[in-house]
Image (cartoon, rainbow over the protein chains, first blue to last red):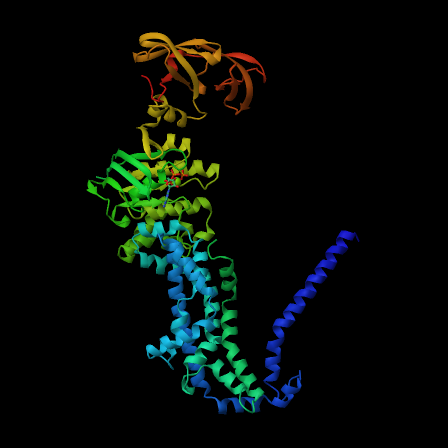
Amino acid sequence: MTSYGLKQRLSSVAVYIFLGVMAFLSIFPFLWMIIGATNTTSDIIKGKMSFGEALVVNATTFFTQVDAPLIFWNSAKITIIATVLTLLISSLAGYGFEIFASRFREKLYTLMLLTLMIPFAALMIPLFMLMKQFGLINTHLAVVLPTVASAFIIFYFRQSTKAFPHELRDAARVDGLKEWQIFFLIYMPVMRSTYAAAFIIVFMTAWNSYLWPLIVLQSNDMKTITLVISSLGSAYYPDYGAVMIGTVLATIPTLFVFFAMQRQFVEGMLGSVK
Amino acid sequence: MSDVTLRDVRKSFGVVEIIKGVDLDIKSGEFVVFVGPSGCGKSTLLRMIAGLETITAGELDIGGNRMNEVDPSQRGIAMVFQSYALYPHMTVRENMGFALRFAGLPKAEIRKQVDEAARILELEPLMDRKPKALSGGQRQRVAIGRAIVRHPKVFLFDEPLSNLDAELRVHMRIEIAKLHRDLGATIIYVTHDQVEAMTLADKIVVLRSGIVEQVGAPLELYDNPANLFVAGFIGSPKMNFLKGVVEGGGAGRADIRLPDFGGAVVPVALKGEAPAAGAPVTLGIRPSQFTESGDAALPVTVDMMEHLGAETLIYARSSASDLVTIASQSRPDIRLGDTLTARFPSSGALLFGADGKRIY
Ligand SMILES: Nc1ncnc2c1ncn2[C@@H]1O[C@H](COP(=O)(O)OP(=O)(O)OP(=O)(O)O)[C@@H](O)[C@H]1O
Ligand SMILES: [Mg+2]
């Protein structure tokens, strides 16, 4: 074997080792969560890494302590409304920023991107006061509203719109479409993989969001699954088995969304229009 | 009636004026081609006629009605784009029927129109495919089909063939000519391609920097260019321009001395008076005008040769290093570095003044 061949072999071995380690690091928490769901709290604390027999007990505890249908419904409602509104509003903004020239466009855009640098912790209190003034504390609307104009998603849509052919707009105008029809009938379907990728990102963020809902949702019947799981885990005698069951259940929708849209997600990240 | 009339039409982007006052009369059924160097405003002018760009000043009439403020879809035009601009998420049939659906035509009527266009363009087997699954030539035909179904008064084409390979381009060129003959519609067509312009046009409009340099039938522009720009732009290989000085002459004739060619003197036929002696002029001779029997003679040295089969292009230099292109129908027995005497009939030479305008 030539030294060149040997070198290549070695480097591909190194690549596989690296990928293996990374894969393990990302899969391990999932594994631990699933194993934990079948073990008692004391086994989990001891660090037991094999499946146990406590699955039914844990599930019973979880479902007696938590009004699961209501909590999942809260999460689902917030997530769906937030996702639809964010995609609609942020894609409209991104499209507008890219398509329509104006004297203030770039300044406005830069200003918007700068807001990405403000940490949420700095916004929390003013945002809370704002919501209080509107009388929205302890409503789901308060959770949704601050997220619908997402600077990041606007940025993502503007970048993707650069690949949207201008001549398609021209063709549509000659065919008699108004601006809003061009957006809904041409732009949206053409950019569907961009929407799919954005959908996954927004959906996961909304479903997993914790801090802001924790602040504005105060009564138990309004809370989302992430809040409830965390309150289970921070009880005086936390039942980690039940927490793990809740976590597993909470992970299912995101996994489902991701696997259902995986192909479009990859396409969307690479660019919609080819 | 589908005449198109432009009256002192102007377009500015911000402070930059791109179209600087264009007057144009296009008769119903005419095939008009816009040519000109890149960036001269051909597309902009076409898009203004389509209604995709606003008109800064002037007036645009189509079929006798002012169109400046009319929506693109109401102008009675259809446009074929360079990138075809087919809707990628729709099938060929949906693409072609889209405008009609939008105009509120009944389904059966749309189907009839689309089928008719598909038949003309031989698209029937492709109707249920998406654009992605079509070749370039097929996409082009769908784009034309989408225009046809609207029965426009005026077809607008913006470099429709420039994304096709050479062979397909020739084929589509013939198709478009046939289409024009069959439909009898007015066509305005933008192209870079000399041959497309010469073969398709009833009338060529030569643009430069937003100004119309000359309008005329292809052969008229070829034989009688109004200025140096048009003379150099129309015809391939390009016309030779030789620097000269008026030596003498009178009514109907000017004697032009060519200092770069050993002071050869060429008598050029004119309709009017010769310019004053000593005036600097430019002599224009097409490469194909050189012949053995010509009365004017230029001593040159052969620099380069291209054998194209049907003709041979000889690139030669004068003693002052001016380049002259000679197209020969025969296959002359000469070598690089040979000196020869290039002859042309002085009656065929064109004369241009120092301002670039033709001297008749
Ligand atoms: N939206 C616009 N804003 C500013 N300038 C523009 C705009 N559209 C075109 N221009 C300018 O107008 C000029 C003419 O452009 P146009 O596209 O009409 O040229 P063209 O003759 O079609 O060229 P080509 O042969 O390369 O297609 C160019 O200098 C271009 O930069
Ligand atoms: Mg152009």
